[in-house]
Length: 163
Image (cartoon, rainbow, N blue to C red; front, side, top):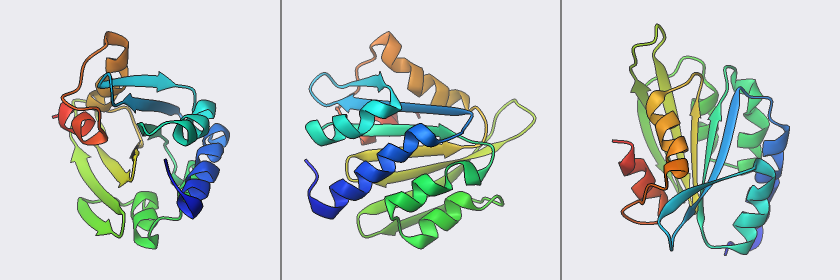
């Protein structure tokens, strides 16, 4: 389980999720034993984080960066990660700072607007951020309903599943 400031900081950020005014917010835990993605309400995330060692996935769809700015600020990320995620003029990038990894990749679709997917990896936490629906992310998020088994019960296995 998390310790000290990291636990408190993430708990504060998770508490902010219920106040987000975004188009879509999905929270999941990755059950390590069953190797499955399990959906949960955002208000359950802080408790699950504190009581288990499961990894969690937070998927945010927001048309405007200000809709999730406070959440990112509460995560206390490296300033360049937050800046990149909030920049409306996005581009492909990859960065690693201390215990966080961030990358942005273009996602091309048949929809008239192509989008970028921001991915933030922290210890036990995967966060995906996008401005519009992305079919691959939607499919990953809904796989828990089909009881799809991951190769491992980790956020890395979840990311690889999306390939």
